[in-house]
Image (cartoon, rainbow, N blue to C red; front, side, top):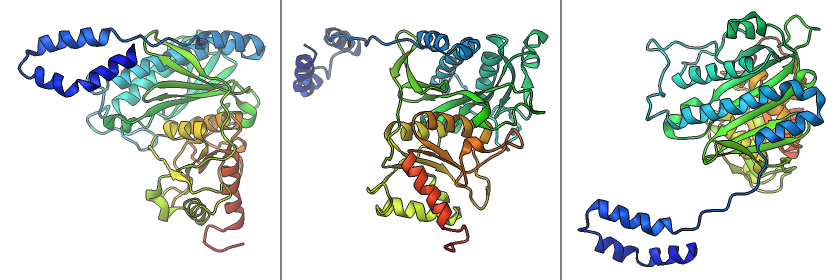
Length: 387
């Protein structure tokens, strides 16, 4: 029925336009409503909800049970942020947070949405239970205890700590481009002076991101695979649409900001040239895809295969991505999906942090692509001389 109606409407498109030329707009609206109301409503898939997924997985992994309310709160926070992103222009939520151009610890001017989303994540992590003891955010100069966030000493204890970037790529919103949120949950280890300064291999127990784009997708790993959940706009719940995501072992996509090409190290330049010439081990000429938001670009690589990179440059010798709350969560997700994550000199999850907002060069993606890039670093010096 729907195909037949579509055919008839297409066939009569021109004649309808001519016939309705002098008809009042209200009359046209009524006619259009009658035509399109007869379409068949798409059948909903029978999909597991994010809530049910957490119940089952946290039951299977007893060590994760204390994190069930935390992960559920993250899902709810993503729903709130999704609404804010959609209303940014119409509700005057876009623009700088302060009139005097106040910057955060990164030296970046804070946006209204950055501060709003930061508050949402702080409350989500600290207010849902007493499992999280402290948090670190891209928008905060220093770490904060949940007792400080909630104003109550009852939230002072917890077996875990959380890190997050509340809204990655927020400047994209002005052009209606994708943005995202990133988070990671670490054990609250008592073996180090600062529990946040531990490598991802030993401390990271869960990680995820939420992509706000054509659809809103929440991707999470609890250390036993990667799963994706799409927000149903009708029901307002996340549904299990991407089960056990596996990244292709090699892929045709490369996602680098090539505006900085001449500032990249020599191994990266040579690698990119090989991709474009079709002489890399991938065996095909690759396609460039770069949105300018970490979550969007990495998600594209995760689904289709390839490599995402933010290398060191002359201006930023350590790269620009933050190890603790951007690189490590993404590294865990990619590795759990069968991919790899490297700094060019070693595995990202093995890097020992020295400070909260530490930056590292970042390359994540299909294992063959990332391995090949590491080979370029092994064989070529940064000063253009071969070993």
